[in-house]
Image (cartoon, rainbow, N blue to C red):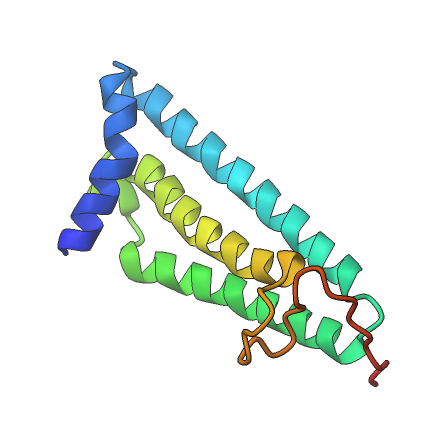
Length: 142
């Protein structure tokens, strides 16, 4: 519970300090969430492009992304389970939902970025993540 409180305060306070109205705070949070979604899509497309010759990888990347979307949606349903959301969570629900989506999306962007940017030489558990500054020769798999 403390983690959630700190998260909400961290995301909410900058908007309050700026003296914005609730509507402006909601708009700002949702705009930021949309920007994070665009970052996610860009990172995902870059990952698909970089690994385009590895059929098995691409198939698994797509499956993982669909699973992540299901996870994100399930997390939101867990956080806000009641159908009458404004009645249950108040008028700040849309803003809070956007902030929750933002946080989940930023985490996913960082996960995908590891494949795009690669890891340092010596990371023996990196699996399919490429090594930075290393020419990786992939065998085409089907």
